[in-house]
Image (tube, rainbow, N blue to C red):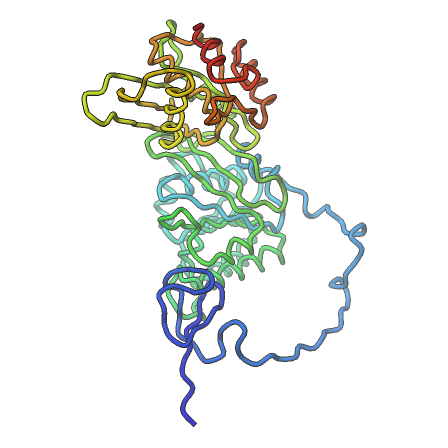
Length: 444
């Protein structure tokens, strides 16, 4: 009998094949095929009988009405914007995964969370596999994140991290990052899918056994996805993404998954020389208001999660000196702007085909929802006609290819926010079509 040939198994989903391939045929992940023993793939091998175990003591199932919730009450991290995203705070035993681009400020934010929690009287263990304790101390001194209840360690071995937990008995654990921790019993370097699964599984087990909230930092790939196996996102309780443009100081924390609260909340922060600061009312960051009205500007209300934000759109239109006019955008979708230019020329009679058009937002905010269509169109029309829009006017609405103004979600929330900030006139879906909106906004 010939020797059994080895098979190659995907570390992400378990799909197997008798020869190596660069891309998994099941989950379409690249470079995840590892050589293993025959029968190691999903659907292969021997099915074994598993015997039932007698259930005794506290492990017995009980009616849901008899389960006490006293031990799972959320407590505040003393950072209000982070609590907002978490759904009120950290729940004992919860595991939070925070991801983000390199240099966006993940470590700064979590050091702030750890320090504020420690100042409230709780013992906090901050484990870093990327920085030395000296580097963490320097950053803590710069940001004012100093407390006797904050313990720091620089470790990359899982067993040592678990030993630190036993020795300190923290009430909050921060691991920065999960891709830098490795278990000696598992083959492969830190950051490999098998290592990440083992590290995450052990930390989650400790979190559940000790009712210890754990915050894990996760790296992202060049596509913006969390590095490592997708099983990591399924295992944790909360998945948050920390995002922001490096050219601006504003940062957002978004909840992608939350077992204890909503997933449509957004926390706003601002990076400063002293660290990271909460921004409870960020609307003023996206306005550039002068005393005299200027053509080519229009204010809109965008909604991030459940939070309405006032944002300003600016447009500049000049005669093109090239056969193919330029279309330059910043903070808005270029394809959307191209569509709006076509609608303006066809439905409203504005000649923009032979002009260079520049559209940008103020403060680095990105407008991705269709509700900003009307403000973009008004700003472009204002620049073409060289007629300024009134300071007290705000516009929001989606523009169809037929030139109609469609209703948008959270219209009442947008209107209330505009009224709170002193905008007494609004142009929205109630005006009907694009020509009527331009007439009202520019007094045609």
